[in-house]
Image 1 (cartoon, rainbow, N blue to C red):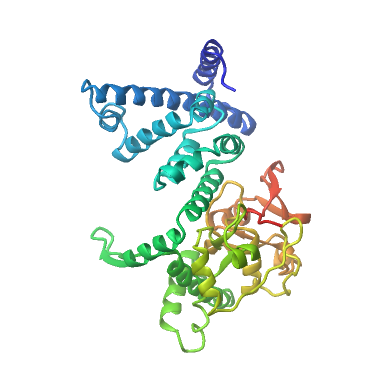
Image 2: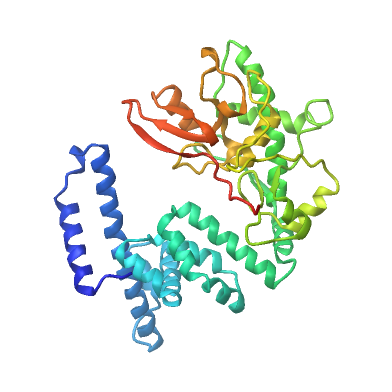
Length: 416
């Protein structure tokens, strides 16, 4: 609940004084966390004031007494055109959902949470947007408890579900639009001489491409570990792309073009429901009708989860994680195992939490996807990652203090 104006003013004065008088250079880790929380609270209050200023600017512009908000934000707010457009949309969300503006003023949520609502509702029609806004109370509660990334995904899924109910086939139409706009662009950077290739593809095509790259990268990584000359992860990925695109039909690449999709059984058989899961292993949503059609022409690999969302059947002990183990891991996780990381699982290494050289086994209970920077954090930075029952992970700093403990399973749970 929003504080009375005098209490809000007192709190802002208090927080501003604390931020102004604190020297970040002398703080320890716990004090820095507290300091950054205060800065975030102060920033949220400033963003709420900017919302009110944008609203006033819009009213004056309607009377012909001022420029449009985006122009003023760009010229006088010292923001880019993109950020000005975002701030303009933020005000519209707060006008439609006053509770979000109150929470922003209090510092309960951030501008990023409001922007997530704006992004999710941008392409909804009036009826669809009204249904979305009808979930305002529950959305606000989730925003107060979730990170911006998690809340953004939840808003996107809610909008997708509403759009599907109002307009059957709309997600299929969107996928087809993306297909027609897919393209490859090549150019040479004149300063570095590096040749660059930009691929813009729909989610299904992108998944097929990366499935091939991942399979080839696994083959090449095994060869790399047996070689005296090691290459970087980035170079290995480039080599994997070349291998996948030049070895098709020669025995190594013919099986690399699959699409890994996570869908719960109820959605597959009966269609979307309130807790549907239908997405790539990177968490990109896919149209259910498209996945059903794909299921007619491909193999379906069932992954059985227990009540804690943990894969029941563990993998065989080998030096490297198998393709099947990657599938099992991606059924539980969409991203890197670090709590603050959003790198998708298909760009992660599979890390042994008990090192292989120390007797670790390539069993599912001992494996965790970790992106390249966080993999270096473990091996060169002195951090440790352990996994307990129900895939409860603990990240420990080099000084022995616990950084974070929680579940690694960040796939949205499906209906029972």
